[in-house]
Amino acid sequence: MVYWAGNGLHDIIMLLMNLGVLLIGGALLALPVVLHTETLLLVSVLCGSAVAYAGLAAVLSNVFGSPRTAVMAGYLLCLLLAVGLPVRMWVGFDDEMFPWVGYMVCPPFASFRALHFLALGCTQVEGFGAVELSTEPCFQREHTQAALGHLMAGTSPRKGPVLTAGIVLVSLAYLLVEAVALWVLALALDMASRSMPHVPLERSDAATKHGRSLVIKASAVQKKYLNGFEAVKGVNFEVYEGDCIGLLGPNGAGKTTVCSMVTGLMTPTSGQIKIWNTMQGSNAHGTLGICAQGTVLFDDLTVQEHLKTFAMIKYMDATKADQHVSDTLGKVGLTEKVHSFPHQLSGGMQRKLAICLAVVGNPGLVVLDEPTTGLDPMAREGIWDIVRKSGGKGGCNVVTTHLLEEAEALCTNIVVMSSGKIVAQGSPQELKERYGSGYALTVECDSPEDSHRATQYLRQVLGNPELRPREQHRAGQLEFGVGSDAMAIGALFQAMARGAESAGIKRWGVSQSTLQDAYMAIVNGVVVDGPPGMRFKDE
Image (cartoon, rainbow, N blue to C red):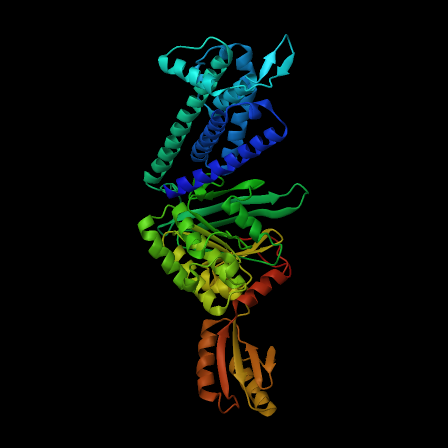
């Protein structure tokens, strides 16, 4: 109710400001309809038009899912009715005091009709095409009172200013009735939509994997712009409930374009994207949370108002919204900034707020485009915790990032893109095993002599007389590649535990190749074709 009152008041004020400009302009141009019409009557017609138009806008915003579509429908309706008004007058419908009801059921008709007869009362017609502007008061108070008396008595004035005033009063009555009816209808539509159980997407016929429903299915998705540039070249991937898919790749790989198509901001040139088995671009985005690359906030809303607004938009129960908002802010360290405006926050805090807006209300699908760039490690951990929990409640997340540590911490599946194609995909561990260089043994020695002894010892243990350090991090610290055979790694541990100290090794450790190693191997290699069965050209 508060939302409707505020939104309606805003629309009415904006319309009245436009009408105020009309009155001032008419007075400056000495228009008789402004100067010689009874002020109360003219202002009543204009105010009634403003309230009725605002009600029409409220109804259209409930009927159409897209604000842009609602605005276009409203303009088109007004245009058609404005064109139809002279036609109605030409065929003689406006010769009667009470016109055809169907002709008056929309505010533009009643408004234009009233304004037309207000202007007509300020002219004198002398033959075809000859119009003389009146310099006398067009509608005096007695004319309006006489017309009102006729209407209340159920009779119709026959001619003159009283007849014209009566027609204007009838049009004004239509406007007022329409204004009330439209606002009641708009409120009823809004209440009906809120009272319906919010089941944003039909999931019953979605594919499943290990009991988890398929959330996103991208099939041969291509995006080609008008200038011929092909940003995405036939990508395929699937995301299931509880998954967090990470899109990795160099700048210009097509990651943001894929996210834009998943969220409905762009339409694929070919192929299709289904969300909960519903085509992209439909109501499948009803519970979608988005954090774009650029931070987008409202200058006149506080931190708390941002989150409460987005929680209500996502149909969160008002009784639970306050606690949910408080918990979300606490996890990212914004509790003390709850009443601050965006311009009072640092860049990192603004980014935290943008991420909170994406996950507030527990949406079923969250798309995060480079979410934690520029955040400190503690804030990043808080964001990661929120993202993990949002994906664990029957939903899923799509994350693009250049931080491989973030991808490994969050993602259950990683898709690596390059030049618009998927060149590798799999879990972080799978990618490390497939494209990494196996395990590495790092040893630390006190002197060059000890380093030489350690190398000789490892050649003997690993059975490789040509073994050399593949990297020297700093003086005395060497790194050897030891493959990925589990039995060999086990034997290496035993050998190091027995003879490392006698071989001059002060400290040692075994580690697996990092995700960064695998990523660099993927993007630096030239892939013949995407998965499955991808291979490098030099293989």
